[in-house]
Amino acid sequence: MNSWPIQLNLYYYDFLGDSILRKSVIAGNWKMHMTCAEAKSYLQEFIPLIKNIKDDRKVVIAPPFTAISTFSNHSDFDYLDISSQNIHWEDEGAFTAEISPKMLLEHGVSYAIVGHSEPRKYFSESDEQINKRAVFAQSSGLTPIVCVGETLEQRERGEADRVITRQVEQGLENTNPSNLIVAYEPIWAIGTGRTCEAKDANKICSLIRKLIGFDDVIIQYGGSVKPNNIDEIMSMSDIDGVLVGGASLDPNSFARIANYQ
Ligand code: PGA
Image 1 (cartoon, rainbow, N blue to C red):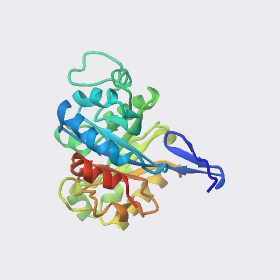
Image 2: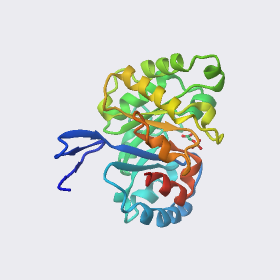
Image 3: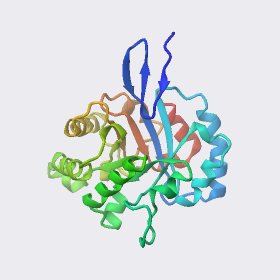
Image 4: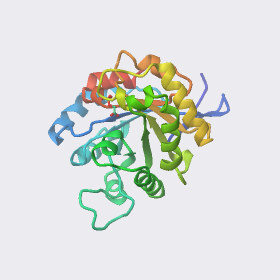
């Protein structure tokens, strides 16, 4: 009752418990959805639903770049953190279509999604590029959300652990695990309505934690997270949050997810 948690970025201390606790991070990835006008009406509906959210979690949304200022200019902006959907490894230069940390920081962005399976698949993003993005995001003061995950074929061939190990070892080289989120997103569960069994997802998240060698690293699950499966997913010991695509586009669904039990 007398506990007095101090909010840190990804952790909080409970003085009575005398320990650092991992904060869960509930992140919505809007992908290529939402104009500024749509984002504005979303926030009007969404923010009242998360105003009383518990102290043990953070809510983050990754809107398209054009809607980022709709968030940072919103009067109730404090209830949410903003993520970008990409980040480059230089502050400026001849890199058409890329976005740099200093451009994002100017708009109050604090996270950057890196290595999502869509740019890996459609734009041949490599582990080496993902690593450069993650390292530069950290050195610029942003927290990268680095996505890893196997395809259905890799899973069926029994290669999931090997693929994840490679993505973690190469993608996270020289990153600081205390300012990092890793999202385990099995590709076959993204946008398909087919969620990975919570226990199977937990096993891979535990493998990722061991590979990183830092107990307090924040590890999310992503792939068809919905209001009806969030409570089970969040009950798993090694899952510290979720990265939500489709269900984050509806303010009521995403608020239910953020207010998981
Ligand atoms: P989904 O997407 O929730 O629509 O499956 C997850 C993601 O791509 O991060």
